[in-house]
Length: 248
Ligand SMILES: [Zn+2]
Ligand SMILES: [Zn+2]
Image (cartoon, rainbow, N blue to C red; front, side):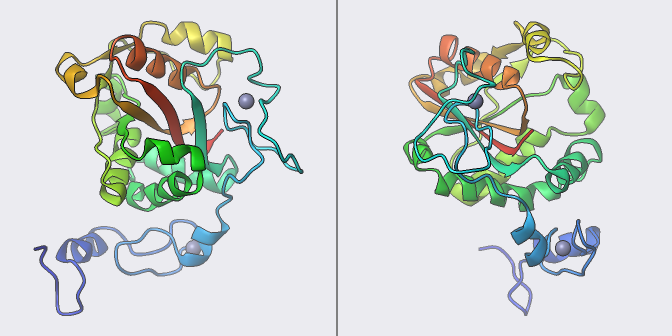
C-alpha cells in the first residue's frame, strides 16, 4: 500500500507540493494536492465537442447533426481510423502544451492527461479501444535528450495511470526531422517519410492488437498518419485511432 500522511494524502503528493509551487498554471491561485490547475481554469479550458470532422477531428461551430468529413481533409489518405482531440487549439491550451513541451514542465502531464481521459470516455467510437495499447509519438533521441523527455510519452504514461491501458513505446524515430511548425501538409509528409520504425522487441506485443496513438497536438495529421502506417504495415496492428490533447 502507498504511504499516506495523517491527512490521508499520499506522501508522493506531498513531495510534489514541495517540489513544485502549488499555484494554478493559468491563474496563479493557490492549490494543494499536487494539482496544476484550479477547478475554474479546468472548467474553462475549451473542450472539443461535436460537431467535428469524423476523420481529422477538426472542430466546427454551428449545427451539424450527422457525421461528416471536413473540407481540409476531404480526399486525403490517413492510415488511422480517426483522430480525436480533447481541447480546442486556443491560446489557453497552447500555453499549457508549450510548458509541457518546451519548458520541461512534465508535472503538467498528470493534470493534462485528465482531459485525454475525458475525451476517451465521452467519444463513443473510443469505447471500442477500451483494450487498446497506448503508443506515444516518439521524438528522435537527440531531441528527447535536449528536451529531457518526451511530452507524448509523459501524457501517455499518465493516461495509463488513469485508465489501466498499457503504454508501450513501440515506435522509434530513426532519423531527425526538421521542425514541422512552418511546413505545409505536403512538406510535412515528405519530411517524415521513413522516419518511423517499429521497435523489434515490441513487435510481438503489438501484433494483432488495437492501438491509440497519443500526442500533444494534432495539426495536419502527417505525423499521426506516418505512425499509423508503420503500426499497421510493420507492426500488424489491426485498428489505429489517434488521441491528442489539442486540435491545432
Ligand atoms: Zn486557475
Ligand atoms: Zn477533417
